[in-house]
Length: 326
Image (cartoon, rainbow, N blue to C red; front, top):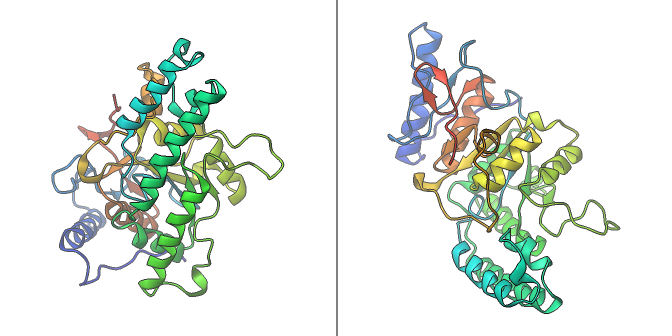
């Protein structure tokens, strides 16, 4: 059965306070006290989960089958300078006989539309940037504990990234070592701690000509759900990019779309394509939950698994209203 991890005296003080506050809110609700529909993490913009009622429907699946994680900036620390990457690729595009007439787009897509020489130059730039990021790769704080918690509670865990499979393998080994170093290994954590892994060079099957379309297309999420034998409404997508991760999650109709903003900051994860500002496009980029750390996300999931019914989100007045990301 699914169960939440009880607070441990060894928890970090901030997380222990948050854990206790969730329990206090839950107990107050159960005793019939009037409890506001949200509570702030440390004064920030992220809501703690509380028990849902008819006027505050849950915005995470009540019985999730698994969690799909982005990699860069989510499972590992943000290490890619996207502004520098865009600048370098755009320099190649502007000097390319084909590229100089192209409109700005995702740098990965732009590179494929250049002359053979231009595409090769872009390939070298991507390889250099990703090599440096791989050398500097560091697991996100709280990531190892969260993945272990999910696996221990019977949830599936997958990775969906615009990075390459070989770089995901480095991250996977770091997490596997971290889980086992914390004494949480054994048969519960086979080598395939993340299954499946969908990178930008992953194909549906070995004989496929083209890889699975990358985020913000929902194809990768749908591929994971197919592998798990579940509906997207039973899955939670977690990432640090509203343009890529939240859009893919909402297009796939995931049960939850969680935006990670470490320290409450919005980092540059823009790969270069334009995003629209219509109501529909803004809604696609809107998460169902914002968290400032993976430890906060684990806290929400602990409450979710314990109660199977929570409310999370940004609240205006007495109604749940997700705040669009502009």
